[in-house]
Image (cartoon, rainbow, N blue to C red):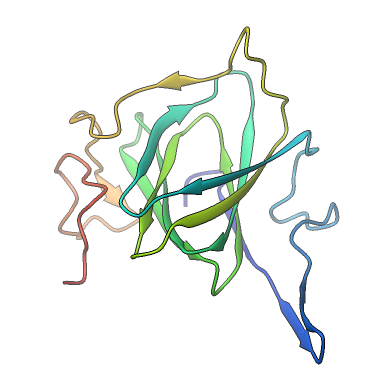
Length: 166
C-alpha cells in the first residue's frame, strides 16, 4: 500500500436488541493517526464516481461505507502506484487516505452507497484544500495496482467502471 494508507476491519456485536459497532476510536493507532475535526455523511447513486481530488495542506480522510458498496482508490503520480479497496456496509472497514494522494471512490453494485467520512481539517469554503482533476483523466495510468504489476489494468488509463472479474 502507499505510505499512510491503512485499513481496519470493524467488529459488529450483535445481540437480542440489534447490532453495535465501534466506528472510530482514538486508540486505534494503526488507522487513527490524526485528530478528527469534522465528520460528513454522503449518499451517492449507483454508478456515480466521485474522483479525483487531493489535499495540499495535510488533510487526511477516513472513509467508512455503512451501506451499499464503494471502490475507494488512491493514486500517486510520482510512483504510478494505485491502491484500490472495495468497501461495503456488509463488512465495515475504516479506510485511511492521506490527502497528498489523488483519491476518490465509485459506487459499485445496484444500491446507493452511504459513506461517512472523517477529516483532520475543517472544510474552509473560502479557501478549500482541494485540487481536482476529471474522474476519467487519461493521465492516471497505474504502473501497479495494490502492489501488483501483472494486473491487466496496469499501463492503461484508469477506468473506474471496469469490472475486473467478469
